Length: 431
Image (cartoon, rainbow, N blue to C red; front, side, top):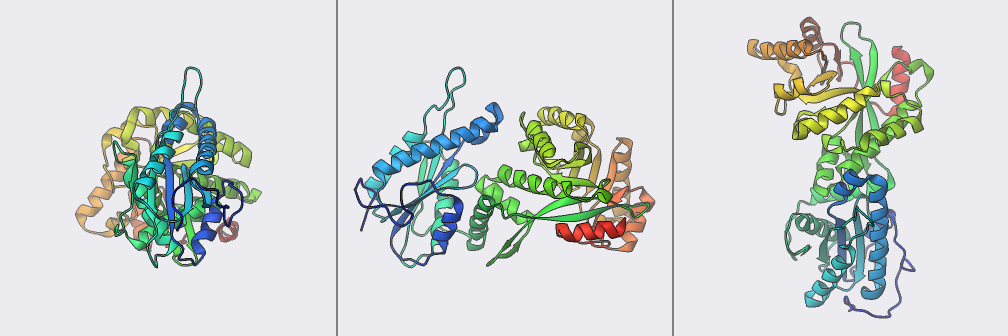
């Protein structure tokens, strides 16, 4: 059995020490093999701070440098390598023959972390890369996806640990198989850009006219079936890949909307955004994306949840003002499920308030329910915001929303979320 020692054994089966892409990880995970291996998952803990402070281009350069350092370390220390790959976002995977473990494994882990935890910058702004490492040794008859899941769980624990910067997964580390499968599927889908966009039509209440669509994400997985946007973002939060997922959805949705025919040029597109993405460079990134796609900023709405909005009101307000100055509109998403604080409603530059789908049935509920809904609509109107109701499924709901002054709605009453081609056909008929 091989171990984590410096040998001259020939590298197997992916050839020379090349930093592979995540599709090779998918191939490796799909192979049926019971040969003992050690899986190391390395993540860059402070990449977001680098992107926020110095820009994404600098962060990307730091990732490339770390990849070079990992390769150099692997050539010296981790023969024979079965696979070395760059994963989505800030992670790298090393698969090594053998699972000897013990002191030898700990020394190798420490040396790897020391090598990549170095200053990468020059001059007045040095970049300190702070890495974390999750390690899993294969067990007899363990599937490779389970092994990868245990390594990911170990890395997640390492991110939150002070002191020792690596965690070795215990042989009986408990995990939720379904949850871990979604995490693995997300990493793979981000690398292969396999996230699917569907479009939820939005209508004007008074006229019934189609006015735009909200972009939603899905992932069609051969074993897990359709994975919803909620499950994808929950997974992204566990894996610290929310920014990567959100940016891919925005990019795909904007390119889809930019390809709409001229007859649909009056339709708006709404995309979701986390306030944590509102860095100093986000606006520039988004404007470049819009220019490249040929989609006017004036047709774009950014939807942010209540919870994300209140994390840093001053910074959020500043960034949203910059985006609105370029013509974009801002919506509070899922209103009624979070903090519902009047403070941020008066402090932030907002155009729309979206009533959460869980509250829409209240409009035909008890007298108190209707009073609350009426008060929400009146408050938003007084603050100069238009109202969008989500989850409208019944004609009586729409009638009462109209009576209370709601401006726009979306929901199964008129249409479920549609694939891009289906939405285009639907929109052309509606117009």
